[in-house]
Length: 553
Image 1 (cartoon, one colour):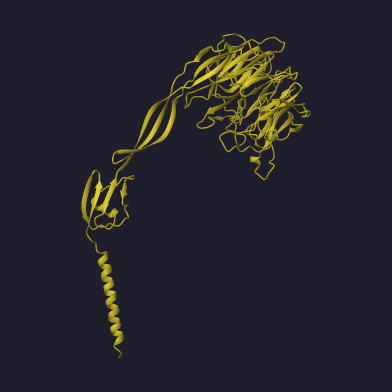
Image 2: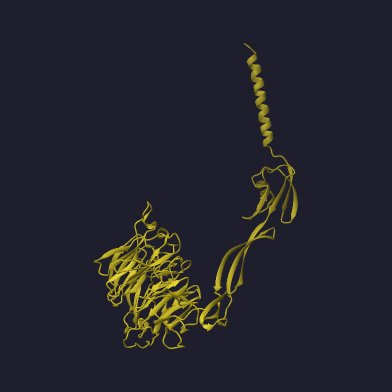
């Protein structure tokens, strides 16, 4: 036999045995001396552990969830290695901080120029600020604010500054009542005859309605408390008696309220909401109630129960009482219709896709009645021009609808979402967006048309002046003259085509109401009976953080 294969086999076996010996030797624990810095001391330790994690277990060092070890627990130990354990803890700290009040300056065109008066003293507010504090080995290394909660709202200091003589005298029939600086003001027949109706400075703009004879103003005051406090409270003031104090009404959480259009009627219509966290701060009930203010609140009659019609019911609906007092026009984010004031029957006149705002507000059009209560003017979300989803369409058209559903007509295509059409005795005034396909941020020109939409004429502003931000137009029932809001001031548009005349100059005037009382017996201010306040019906609907007078979805 050939001996060479045996020699080769012996050499191969020797190599295999040597390799196994080396591997086994490498796997045997070897002693290593390392140091551990932990809890303020340095420990020298001789160990046979293979990793930092094994060493921690062997040394009985307990690690918290936030503690940091360097090198990491999975790292192989080496002789002479220095290991550091950093103890990390967190704690929270809540402190109360002062929220300084702001100073609000209101120009009063009645006071002499330069004269100043403090209408309301400022009061600092308070907030609770919670901070997370991180400590390493007992020493603070960082602070992170976790929450900030307003526990007491600051009260603005309101400084009245005289501005008499800053505007020429302007005369007009009847009375103009408007909001300015959180208060209600009245001008009677002239810009010179101007006086305050309220002094609280907290009117929240949700409700601002004057009775048909101009004697009573219905308004809401904000409630600054948080938690279970109502959104606001409903109040009334006599607009004819100088110095008359406002009266609190037993209705809370109101998005819409309006006096009956019938001069001899002491009823109001209202719709409610409950306070909600986040924006917009309420959740609408979309209900509708009628209450005779001369009777206890528990006699209020519910026309509509709480409901969630449409995708944006949380925002609310716009309502408008018809001039004959028999019905209400309503608008939600996706629907226009009529409600019978007697039995609450709802008739839908038009449905359309709701506008996707991608924000915390909803678009809801306003509604306006013709003087004979037969037609409604409003805005409809139109079909998209490009290949985009219907809810993202930038097209908004002005439409007219017969209240009985027999007629509907588009009279102003691509007018813009804030067109806010309003009937006048001889036509319709609406806003036409200067940039109609970006009308959410566009300015508007005011257009007057005949009732059928013909003969459009720009009436304001004229020339190269920028348009209005949101078309607010009011007019007395007996005239085509109008008051508009421009740059947060009021302007009179005479019915004879004369240039607009400024009525205010303080840059914070809005929500005008113009009343020329008809020649009929004056209705006495009702006596408000305030029995125990029941669970006020369900809620109402509102519109965008929409312009100041939109209270719908």
